[in-house]
Amino acid sequence: MSAIEIETPHGLARAHVEAPGDSRGLLALGHGAGGGVGAPDMVRAEREARGLGYATALVEQPYRVAGRKAPPPAAKADEAWIAVIAELCRRLGDPVPLVVGGRSFGARVACRTAAEVGASAVLCLAFPEHPPGKPEKSRQGELDAVEVPALVVQGESDPFGMPKAGPNTKVVAVPGNHSLKSDLDAVGAAVAAWLGEL
Image 1 (cartoon, rainbow, N blue to C red):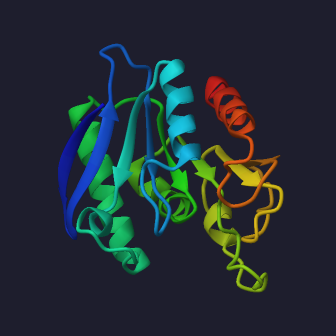
Image 2: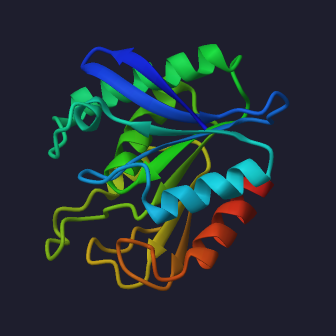
């Protein structure tokens, strides 16, 4: 896996890319708000995609590359992500399908920018439906706005809630909480089955 630094309007991002010459598409995933690209569920999803012949990219947002813990305002995170996806597509020859996503915060970024980057589909690992204990502050609208196929893999006991399925959105509940570490085989199976259908 090679690390590529990509200039964005908000500093350098870093993409960890695995791209076999005959790849059938690209899966690009962003990390959680305070986490990194080594999150077990992201690593497992990346492995499943590679097994199906996808090129993959695990993307570090500029604030993480710069060593900061707290994410920037949504608009800045979105702009940085859009710049990264554009550059990855340029380097990889506009791969199809282009599947974008991430875990938690990264999933929200991917949902908000799906149309702008020209995504074929969106993969959400542990979508934070609402802040813990605040179901009235729903973020379901970000998911519902996605007009391409979307998969949400969600822990059954996630304190951030359980998103609702929709016309384009499939929700798979797996054992565990927001970390999705309890049953990585279930996470992998859900991701592989969905990617295989795309």
